Image 1 (cartoon, rainbow, N blue to C red):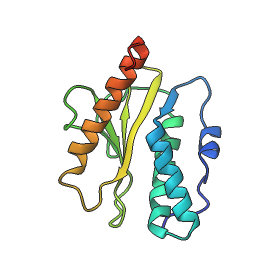
Image 2 (image 1 turned 60 degrees about the horizontal axis):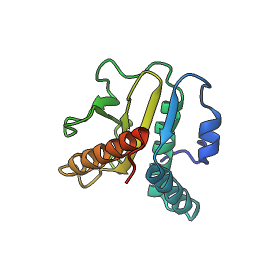
Image 3 (image 1 turned 135 degrees about the vertical axis):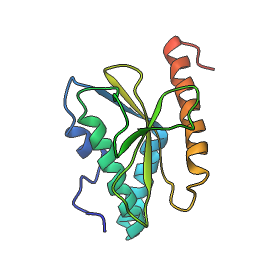
Amino acid sequence: MADRAYPYTLDQIYDQAYPDEVKVTVRQEVTTYYRQLQEAASAGNALANQRRVYLARHLRWCTQQTEVPPTGDYVHLARVVEARRHHVWRLSHHHDQAVQLRSLLWFPNTTSIFVLVAGDKAGTEDTWYTAAAAMAEQRIDQILREQQGDTP
């Protein structure tokens, strides 16, 4: 069972960030998902609480990185092969039969991490990465357009 004492709010997670090292940008969709999990967990939903804790740990991991992008695949961090146009990485947690939360990340340079997508792939293992990778690449394209001033 996930730990309820783990930082409960996004502010508590971000307050633990290493200043001036790596800028972490969390997409609004991920923030919304976290807040929905937070509300469901507060109402007593144990599964939502597990997801919330894993996502909090993923976000905290991002805030504590001092060197990006990754130089290779690791147990909990690996390239998403379904992403064809951009280098997208998945962050996972230890094995949990009930919850298989994944966060998809993009490291555009040596000082930035974007948290693009987060979700539980439990029960949708065959299709989750294909759909999530497509969503992540769409969000990267949008970020790149915004950075170039070409927002639709």
